[in-house]
Image (cartoon, rainbow, N blue to C red; front, side, top):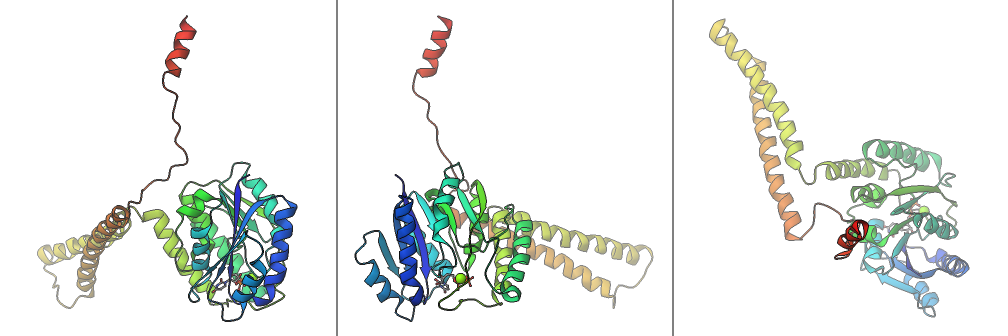
Length: 328
Ligand code: UDP
Ligand code: MG
């Protein structure tokens, strides 16, 4: 049976470890999963590490990746992806808010032919003003801006194929954009409602300021999905709009000066014209520089501008044989 890697970021979760392990083992054994648990300690300052080591010692399915300092949940998840060896990769919060019992159901859904199955905390157990409301707005906005329509981007509980997990690169706090990044790779995505529980031990690591960072990240994702291989189309487009306006105004001013003999000096319009033309030129140059960067980015790392799902190879001679058989 395919190996399932369950990736869990942990940051100061000392009081959740014991219950988490128990639930994981129960679910894995209950559903007869061939599982490995990839726990990533994100530089906890409490005794999360020693607790994990103590409990995990006797079970070879557990792997603990200890980061040197607190790098953030996204980096911890990326580390988990890098160390995961399974054909199927599951991500899960370590604070017991996600219910591991949902994993078998989601794997089943994945096996129906999806590349990523996202959890939807339909009945989310968090504060309304600081959590649910901003998250609701963010989900709407992200759905509108990216091509992936989901109810809940923020739910860490996700199940994906190895191919997807290994081919998306996370930066900053982008783990919530995994579905959008996966869609960019051509993934088939499904969403299933999952159980969500209130946090009992420890505290949440985020506050309301996360909302603003999500908005900025959305800008990055939008740009990357749309223009990462053709930045000149965006910057050049802006440049042409500014420059075009500038040239139009310049023509108008020249007409006034040459034919109507109106003075040019002291007119704000002239200043605007000059600025528009300069900014337009700047945008175009910027776009060209970005094109050079993109090529360096892809070619220096041997990255491809496409993603292959599968390569089918026909059998040598079989088509010819079939034709001959049909004729004969
Ligand atoms: N987490 C992490 N590094 C961080 C912050 C959080 O690894 O810098 C982990 C945390 O231990 C938990 C998960 O990410 O397992 C989600 O964090 P939290 O519960 O604080 O987020 P919330 O559920 O409030 O959105
Ligand atoms: Mg939580």
